[in-house]
Amino acid sequence: MKTVGYAAHSDSTPLAPYTFERRALRGNDVAMEVLYCGVCHSDLHTARNDWGWSYYPIVPGHEIVGRVIEVGPEVTHYKVGDHVAVGCMVDSCQHCDQCHNGEEQLCREGNTGTYAGRDRITGENTQGGYSKHLVVREEFVLRVPEGLDLAKAAPLLCAGITTYSPLRTWNIGPGSRVGVIGLGGLGHMAVKLAVGLGADVTVLSRTPDKLADALSLGADRLLVSTDDGAMDEAASHFDLIIDTVPVKHSLDPYLPLLDVDGTLVIVGQVGPMEGHSTVPLLLGRRRVAGSPIGGIAETQEMLDFCAKKNILPDCEMIRMDQINEAYARMEKSDVRYRFVIDMASLEQPAAA
Image (cartoon, rainbow, N blue to C red):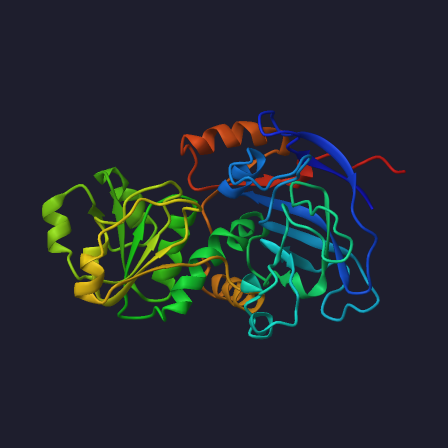
């Protein structure tokens, strides 16, 4: 299938139009027209090869909402015209214990990324959702619930599930006390989802200027992490702290805020972190953990939950040809809180 997208062609050049071939459908494949694609900080890191595993040309995008245009003969759950979604992975081994437990993101053989991955059958590079079309095996396609705004749903496929999964893993619900460090694409979703689950939610920020935003998102309060007095008063307050900060930083200010058996879970920074003191961990039986995205079943649960509760990210819609400007603005944190590409702005490839 001939399609068109925007690709990075090196780690130092702007993304540019790119025409390429999607694979012919296998028996269990779903082909979709991409309608909307969210812009994740991971896309920028991959385009710049910040993590050292990029190849070129590479088409980013793993927050994808679209419409089914064709299905393979073995597909049973989707039909032409269905609204569907694809997140950060498009395959896994399907036979290890983690896959059998619905934790495909933790596949023992490694899941196949929507981009920056390798097709498990052909070894071809995977290409993501900054494109007009996508072909994905049925098991990794998600159904968009009725009533969920298609134009705003795309960031749920990464920012949403990345913050929903730890909330579910640590059994957050009514009466839980949750802190959220950072109020960007991930952080604002963590606030909305924790509030939706019934938790008491505090946003932690270095400055007080995020107070109005935090309250508008449903948080109960803002805690200024540079205010030593306020931080001391908040000692042992939280059951769970979700750390969404995407750059290297110290955990030391936050660990004393955890209650006994409390957990600080890192979902933002990928790479080296500064060291931290073990004293509050040992004295309070506190924990530091990491969490990636969730599995397919949990992601579908999250989409259904968001539809039921009318939880959607705050989005700014852009055209495909504005992606380089969006990347520049992301680096300056100049977005509230997620860019979404309207793929109707991308011209259809010419017929072969």
